[in-house]
Image 1 (tube, rainbow, N blue to C red):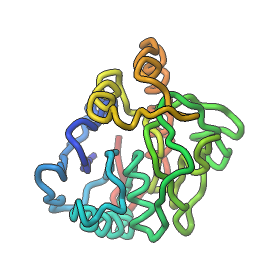
Image 2: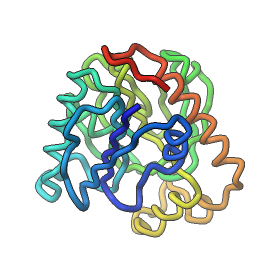
Image 3: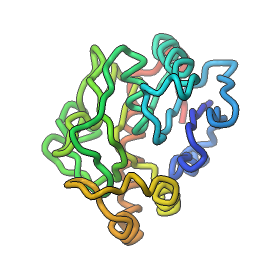
Image 4: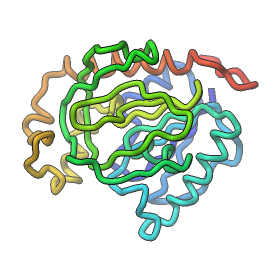
Length: 235
């Protein structure tokens, strides 16, 4: 399995996704837009689009955002499997013509999402505790199916067909990646109804992160088990 990663800032990496792909002997390459915006020369089997503190609308400040969205649109048309996480989910939506704008409230911390039942990945009315860190939201792209929602943000997870998956939240975060985000973005931890303190964000025990990664495994297994492109993705 050939995996390509779009990384937007040095302090938001693959986290628990890295060992997940390693266990499956995947070949992983990375475009680090903050350092070198060169795109993959050949289509990967799986494209992972990570998070970042910028907005998808910040193309004037980050010109590579426009290039990235064009690539995403082409990759989706070419039936590449695409996973977008947080900013990545918003980038997919934007690439497919959907609007992205500030959410009514930032959502930062450990909060539940609720499955819609539209996919076995998120059971209907079941609550899933996840790690959130976002201030914006998005409209669903044409043809998208909503998989999960939350009190603070309506659109939490969606699919476009069987190959494209967008997650507004983070399942890949480890304690160290969460701490790195706190270190680099402390100004976002302003008091609010859905903003936790540094102590609340990092004070959970290791079992909470372990459960997060169990859900990550379930979601990835469900997503990668969907309809394959002509070149079958083998795990």
